[in-house]
Image (cartoon, rainbow, N blue to C red):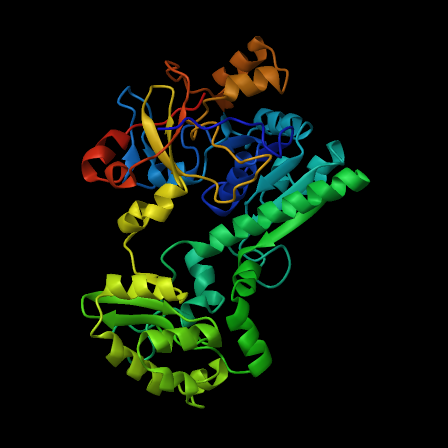
Length: 450
């Protein structure tokens, strides 16, 4: 195993006050944390982020610590947790004091939900004019649905995404189908992070803070991308096509003698090479198939011919020969097979990080590799309230007496964690072993960051 270098990151010196929970907001702040920002995660005492309990599977350090779900671990690294009840006036005052020193506040409460605590944008920017205030909601603060709550599954349905996902009408399993990962939450988190970076750049130039309004429904419509534009230009609502592509042919999975293989021909030149591989150059010369637009019009006939031709191939041989010929293609992996892929191992996508108790936790690294300011995983997801005293003493300048009083009143909570070893970062050399049932048993422990 190779120990990774620790860097400050491109966002070193930027402080994020994170009032969000579940996924879209925490995903955005984790991105910023990976890039070097200091992220202070504010959680409700005795409960914390809802996702802490969203298991199994769960992680338990075996030392009497809280059990944490894999879901929580997926989106809360590189953060400090403080547990504050801001429904109480003294708790809200603590948040306002922290906001006065922050560069960015991220929240995903219902529209207007923080105003009664004096934690809305107007209240916080009154004490910190340069503050960037990012609000993530289901539908935004305007329009007839402004006061509705929004969740990924709901928005996938409302935005039309489920209407274009899954088998074609009449095929087994057809019907509205959600994407297997919560993509609208994730995309909204990405848009929020990008928007925050843009606002930080604007503030550097102008000194001006601003508000950012991120709505799940707006994001969902944006990421319809070519499907949405196909409708806006062509006027025909797209339909589910299984694994087929609405604009590109052949671009789908096909059966071989021993399993399914993806053929992803992206242009006419690749189609010529594919036809040569199949010893059918006549297809490429046929006017019905010579161009992608014609292939799209005659897809049923062409794909039937391709399907028949591939039944005599073994999947691995086909993928290898396609690669040699410059035709994109590949297998359809399960998640465990994807993590075991030699390309994934070579890219060190999975890192093992050691918590304060010496227990290793696997993470997928930040996907983009920056040459001068690489993103890093500097701390594992924190225990609930792990940093309450540290942040209040150091950043908010509270005295120990004031902290003790707040704790006695139930305004704050501090989690005591074992601090037995320095956290270490390693890449995972064998993801198959790390993902096996036997080795995963040791990952049923609670992480604590240092």
